Amino acid sequence: MVVSLQRADRVVLQNISWEQFENLLANLGDQRAAHIAYDNGSLEIMTPLPEHEHFKEVLGDAVKDIADELDLDYESYGSTTWRKRAQMAGVEPDNCFYFQNEAVVRGRLDIDLGQGDPPPDLALEIDLTSKSLDRFPIYARLDVPEIWCYDQGELKIYHLQSGDYVTAEASLALPNLPIKQLPQIIEDHRNQGRRAIRQAIRRWVRAQKS
Image 1 (cartoon, rainbow, N blue to C red):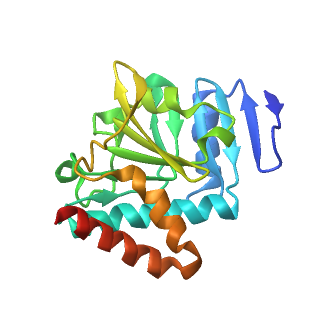
Image 2 (image 1 turned 45 degrees about the horizontal axis):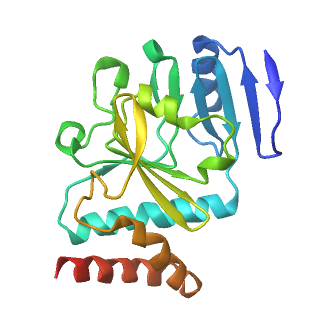
């Protein structure tokens, strides 16, 4: 095993077998602050910073508020560890949602990508460029169709096409909204508190509908 340290809030381990990865997940348990990504023997363990967690929660709430305003059914599975042994890939998004496949997973607690269940329709990643492992190849092998990446006040949308992610202007999960406007709404109301942000986003959705 080879250990490399890029920053104090993360560690990257090399030459980690799938069995070691599974054992680590079991030993760490579900009640932990660290996020994990695994890519064909490389394992990153990252402890999120307050700024990261703030925008993770704000954007996650935004997706839920948008869905409520649009009367869309959804399921949210947070930072679930999604993995496929056959692909030697595992990742914990900052948040994730089912929209197109919501009915397939509704209320389920036993989703298993390795057994043919669909991956989340939308994954959120905060501050992707600071993470040591490139998460795009991991998500691609897990067949996640859409990723939103928030970094330094900008929200980028990526769609999976022929095994690679390409930038897009519109969301697949929420196609009728100019999603890239969300960071500005958040910034305009950030100093007013979380409730003000959520109220502003709901007003924005209603305005788009009308």
